[in-house]
Amino acid sequence: ITSCNGNAEILRRLRNQYTSLYDISITDDDWGNFVVGEDEDLGWLGYFIGKSKCVNELTIYSSGEGENIEAFIEGINRNQSINSLHIGTDLRGVSFRNLRPFFRNNNNLYQLEFNFEVGLECAESIAFVLDENRCQSLESLRFEDCNLGEDGFAVIATALRTYPELEELHLQHNNIGLMGCTALADTLRGWEASNLKHLDLDGNGIDDQGLQTLAAGITNTKLEELHLQHNNIGLMGCTALADTLRGWEASNLKHLDLDGNGIDDQGLQTLAAGITNTKLEELYLSDNLITGAGLRSMSDYFQSESCCLKTLNVLRNDFGDEGAVALADILMGNKSLTSLHFISHQSGITNPGWAAFSKLLCDPSSINSTYLSNHNIGTIGEHEMLGTPFNIRRYLDLNELLDRRHAAIHKILKSHPDLDMEPFFQWKLKLLPAVINWFQSARSRMVANDLIGESIQRQRQSLPSRELSALYKFVRGMPALTVISYWQQQVINIHARRRRLDVEEETAWVRLGGRPRDEGNVEFIQIGAKRMRQE
Image 1: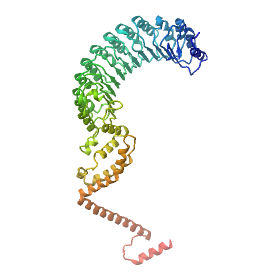
Image 2: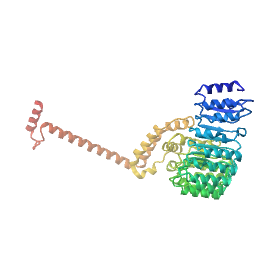
Image 3: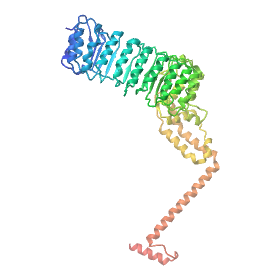
Image 4: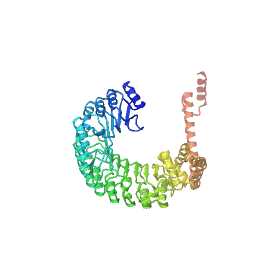
């Protein structure tokens, strides 16, 4: 009943309820663990899957030339352990309506995925099954590269109106168009208590009008990730999205992907105004029409105290040195961004642009400027930073390996070998203890690492002499104050000793029985001494 020993072994393990066999992948090549050969009897495979209590994941990429496909489906319908079902074939024309018992009887299914060319008739069958046999455990639904089209997706979206418990919808590359956006927006608006957190609509031909329609529905969700990569979104779409985000008080959106659209500087400016008060952590804007002017329009957003953005992707945008300078300017003072991704030769960045990033990370013009530089961003350029100059990578390594305070200490020691103490003289000697503590902190936090260890080692070795140099500058800069402070300290010490002697004297008189009225009365003192000897 099987075409090879491997398939026979799968049936044997299924029959014997092997707990190690929790994943069945049915293919027509060696990728899966059940390879459908010629004249394969799939009925037995379905039979044992139906009886299995151990199979959790079932992937059907091909039914090949196997026989008894109907019996195979009938066996699957009896299974109640499968929690993830991935269908990558049309099951040789067998209607998906035949799977109704599976959805009706299985209360463990949380992930359902389709990955093949789904025509309108097949989409209607799937929609019928989902609508008639509501699967309350379903959390993730995927139609990836199915080319559903507007009509096909519209019937699917309509069937989903009774699935508010869905947490993930992956709908990329289905060409849903305006009709699909309208149907999906209607479904999202109809969910009274939506759990949707992830919505993927990449490559669906969504234009400005489609996004305007869709935006009205997403505010009724708990959306954390919105993927709109490779669509046709321009200024009006950005405006609609910005207006939605601005008015969405309960927004949990953390990931927004707008790669590969037609977003220009004006669209980015509009979008930046809408995300100012959001919880957004990742923003993807690669493959758009953004220049330096558009990047500079994000200044208010990055300077905002509410900015939470950690990752910004602007790959394949030709913004040049003007854009690099703009990014360096707007990130000065920002404390959230840790990754800025672009490809330098594709973005047109040359030495002036890199110089701006170097100044962002470590401004050597003064100690205060170095301290106020950016100490939190860890990546600038490509993910591996192959095109990022070495001196910038060194600063980025410091930011990534150390906390903000100690990254600043390292940069100050690196950029200012002769620390200027004169700006501190206005506080006279009050700041001297803080300067000493600063050097002690720097010494205790010097850590070595393969990339920056040699530089840190040199700084560690130079710390004692630099500390002495700083103290000398205080003495040389304020000699009179230093001498006065010395004698003032002497006076303080003398007063302290005098108070200590007074206390000791008072204690002695108490032991002698009390201070005499006439302190010159020697006889009284002798009596007291005699009493102490007796005691």
